[in-house]
Length: 538
Image (cartoon, rainbow, N blue to C red; front, side, top):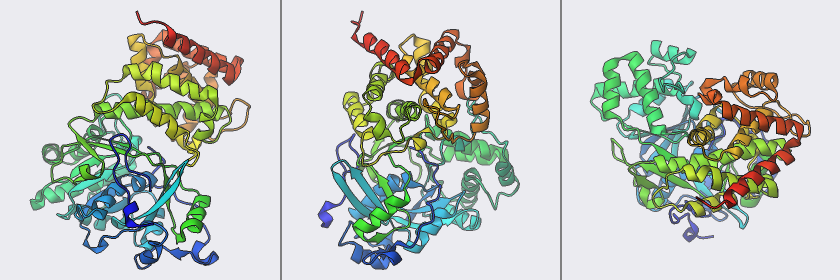
């Protein structure tokens, strides 16, 4: 392998070439020392890069020359497979060493424990049905666990070299009221940050305190870039940070609103959680003892609104697209990819499958998701410039079916109370309001309700991983085939429960699952949609 094999950007829509959201700081299970148990396997550190360069791609740039210009909150597998790779490519192609990245953890020191002993290097393995490539990423220059080092994190954020702060804190992490988008301060850590601004606990406390220090020192503000899967994530970041600042100081809040840029972005790369077996496989194949490698797919996309306040990285040279408005690209991704993930996650779990590639090997479920995207979701989407939606959907089906990734349904089903309102319910609400077909979207909601009852179609137990699991499961079990108890949760469903026609349709879907089983209910719904598709347009 030579350096000529390095990642190179592909045409728009393909993302990074061959080599959204586990919770970002879930730890890798404890493993025995791989290097100690196998000959020929060496730890991953700066001093071993020359050795590892014989087996996989390694940084050829001077890591010591990297300027720490980006601070990222909540470093997980997705950030390491996506944003960090783009910055790494800038350095690797000698386009810029001015955009090194400092990671910050808020809830677990596991990532620090993994990365610090290996000089913040890690391996990205990109897998497709045709094979795989591996690359060591070196653009992360430091990592801090904020609860242990609050003053250090504040100093990094206040450093004049810091020009961009990025976030993957999950949609629920912004603490915004779903009806008003107002910042919700009813949280013990938020109250702590307001009372103790110099030793904050939340991302808002750190960012606002740092911006206040920069303001007082006459330093320019940094740009805040949200990389979370949610509608207008830049607006969400602005609402949360300005809303928090307003609780501290109205003058500071106005300064932030006027000086800080909050571009929205759309990010896309399927990145499952790394398993111990995968870590062992990376060690055996490439001879590298990496405490936490990342496994991902070949596809990658990043769209960002071109509104930065303190310079911006030249990411357009490595495949990122800067646009005036990211809304259409965001809708395309969240309503086609993320909503399909939700639907297939719950339906596939009820069918007894464990991974999405097995779901896509089921002809009934594969046709279901194809009809869902083509008939019910695509007609609701404004076409994004430069994107062929037919080709995009074809690529999605291939990505879902990738057996080399085998994305676990447990990851797709996690935090449904956050994902469903952001990804699937907006299409359903729009379709109901406009009188458009929505039977397959309705079935996805029914599958979620049935999933919350904690057993699959054969009666086998299903673990429900959701911050609101206890309350939602109680409501699902109390209603059984009556959706009204769950639909009354307006923080999730808004006014959908007020639409009597939809309530009746959802009840019918739940009754079908109870009476006829998953297969017959699924087949009937797909057949109705297929007939709609075949009907001539008036």
